[in-house]
Image 1 (cartoon, helix red, strand yellow):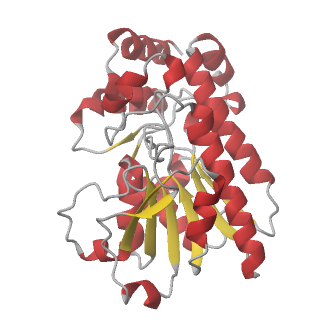
Image 2 (cartoon, rainbow, N blue to C red; image 1 turned 135 degrees about the horizontal axis):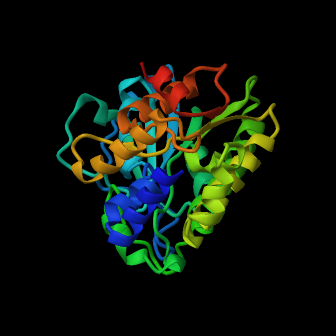
Amino acid sequence: MQVLGFLFAWLMVLNRPPLVAAFLGASQTTFDVCRTEDTAVRMSSSDTSTGSSRVTSKKGRLLVLGGTGFLGQAVCKRAALDGFLVTSLSRRGRPPSSGDQSPSSTNIKYLAGDAREKSTIAEILKEGSYTGIIHCVGLLLDEESGLGQYNRFASGSGSLPDSGSTYDTITRLTAFNAMDAAIEYAKENNNNEPFPFCFASAAEAGWPDMPGGSFVENNLAPDFLKRYLAAKRAVEERLQSSSSELLRPIIVRPSLIYTMDKPASLPAVGAFFIGNKIGLPFVDQPVTVQSLANAMVRSIAQKETRGILRFQEINAMSE
């Protein structure tokens, strides 16, 4: 417990945004919904999909919300490589790198739209042939935290939130809208099996169920982290309570997500590994963004996969 307390103090007192993001556990998610003044749904000028590829995939279409964020990019690439026709919905709309000419990029369609608008996701699903939704939308530092201006640096994709961006609107509302649309889609398409919905949560959302977790949250966590976790838990609760006949809930709970080409987060990665190895029950091992993306995409295809996946299951599924 002292190790985590020291780590927390180190991250917050030094005010190093990338490391603050690391502590928040779900650095996998970034602010990737469209500003309210944008069109509800529009095709990005950087759409890379081809007409023929979008009607021949046996795996069908996969909708990735937040597909241009840190985790979302990895999910889109993995899904395309695995044979899905990918639709990415994000604030940017355009792919993160217009120079990406990899074979998988031809199976990714980028849309710009506001997931906070209830009709946005429903309009996309009208295209048909969707076999799952992956929700990667999130926000590290919201405006109410007083640290919103630092989200550009803490975010893996450099996103800057607008004045209406809170953990509730960006995480909970977008996920609730997506679940509503998915349920209606499942009803209208008479699916014989539950429609898979994968949500990127955070390991810290499970603190109340871990020895010492509630103490850490109640005594060490700042208010903005508590609100962040409240939004994650609200989504988890509703997703798991959804009718099993309509949705198949998949909840990934990574702690710190990292990639070796972002060295600023590596000190925190090491601290989390040490905390887990010495037996702190409320510190989960970090996972690579590639491993998490692999697990999320594969969970869509594996019909028996449902419920909460922690780092052990994430690593096992990514192998």
